[in-house]
Length: 304
DNA sequence: CTGAGTCTCCCTTTGGCGCG
DNA sequence: CGCGCCAAAGGGAGACTCAG
Image (cartoon, rainbow, N blue to C red; front, side, top):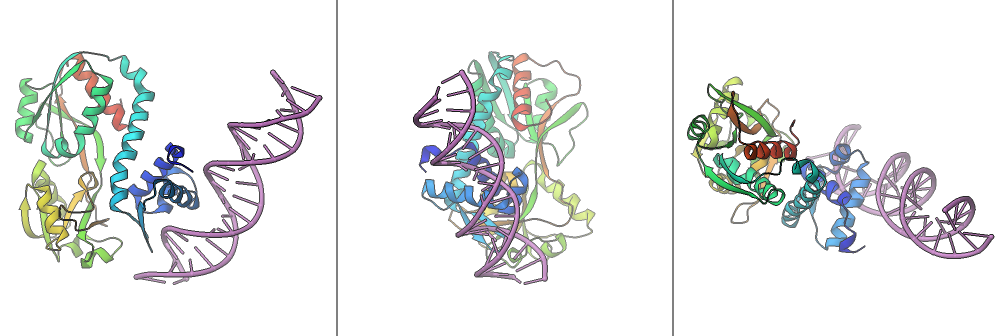
């Protein structure tokens, strides 16, 4: 088989395996047998000439090449998805300017890919972007200074007069270095995590959310560092100085200096991170902004 | 154009091996 | 022993070829 024989089936199976971390779970997710996944991945690796997964006794992890390929595979499937849905988007073909505000995590890890896709399907629309803290972002929405605001809506409820419409939910897991004692477990509890130094990200009110799930379990985290830098979290975790609890959306299995980070499920109830549109409860929105909001909901698979 | 034969791809089942 | 991946064998469905 040659490169041009790579099909969307290969990409779907690959992404399912990357997402679940197990061929058997991926098989369940896409309704085929585990062997079908194994074969498809093996064929894909053979065609690409690189190893995409490291095989372990209890699952698989992406190699550096595999992690890189995730972005491309996702891009290809997204582009196909957009092409198929293009007729639906054309109904909302608009021009003009949209002022979009987003919080730190959203602007860094969520929004860019959707903005790029939106620009492709709506070339007549001009985008104006603002990265704001939640309070500023909410003020901007209330004052009508922005047309659309996207933020992490799960950590702090939107203030009075505003509502959040969830677009995506992202599971929170434990991040550890590969040689960290907690990494050897297939899943861990907050009680176990509390024994180790914790790196707490503070952007987008993540600290508020963390405080709630720790208090709910009657536990106190062993805080080593509170930081607004995602790279600082990765570096500290990669060096084994501490562990962190963060969503899959911002996960990357290596640090800037090439150290490996792994993720483990948490057995306690840790609410997922939710990203959503923040808008006024009573609003009349510009057609372009409405088109963008509708695009986001369709692209994210949220209710349109 | 149509139907039979053949080929290819992808699937499932089954069994084996490694690891904790 | 349970769980997970891999390999082999065989079957189904669709694509392709070709004669009538």
